[in-house]
Length: 431
Image (cartoon, rainbow, N blue to C red; front, side):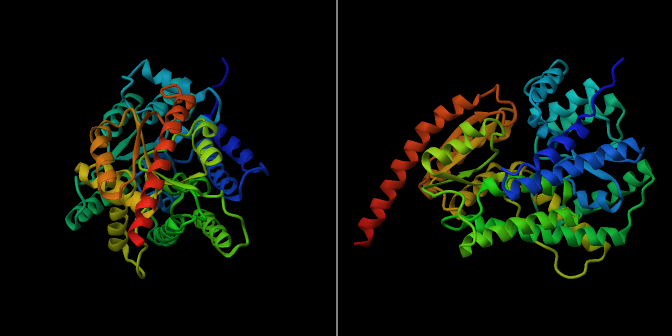
């Protein structure tokens, strides 16, 4: 019988090979190299019999790096879309077992597990927010496959008491991980990981400020992989070096040492996800045909402040708890709809966007319930139109790239008219 492929190792090999493509920008090349190294390290740990962990996107990877456990974000296995035909294979396999209204990013790990094409982790740690698919499918899947499972509780809204509650749960999680893996937390290593993470988050905030400039020296095309790197590699010096390179190259564009990404005519804020498929028909198409530069998307909007001073263990746990509660999507999408609406409006206003795009995943039921309210709020308070676009951001079969492009053509015409109208009103008011 033929051996099953190790898809995680395959991802590492492909990303590492892609990172050497001279046609890629340094930002993309180094980002892919980082991810390739992570997946190869995870595959190598499994081959050596060392503990590995699947974690959800809000769980602090710093803790696992300090315990010498390689963390792989389960939902980030959606990067398998770079291997032709793989996304469809694993989503379809999972859909034979669970309903298709479960998020496809959750169904991919299930498809991988059912196929045997990826080694299962020794432990699985998730948070109970922001959506139903995480606790709903992941807990059942862990039980079915016999994977030890821990869920970190995040309160409904942010508050000092809520941060303390989550910090206590993180400490319980650490004790649980120690018991499951035999790896003890090294507080000294955690301190180093928190320092690296703090610097990385400081750079994310600086990159965010750069992207707000008009014209922008740092578009989504340059920093899109930052989120994917941060949710798995925060706490390592490698991610700090990567973000520093992004920031330095943006500074070089400001100083005239490097050219700007494109001749900017329109500014677009993606206020939720961005389709990962058919870039030539979506993000690149808008840039090439309309000079419309994509500035940011919700997942890159990291607002975690850097630490101040030398923290002791309790202070580190409180900072990590604040981080859990304020990571993108967890911050915006687990509480009242107004939290997400205010965040989306901030993106549009802070980035001086001419248009907003809500690329709503078909499984994100709570955000679709608020989508029209958010669209109206942005138009009323910022004067900016929003395109509500139904997609599965990793499965192009739901809304193919051609269908997205057709909607973008109409939307581009709308925001061009709206921008001219606003400019004419401003000129008339200044006379």
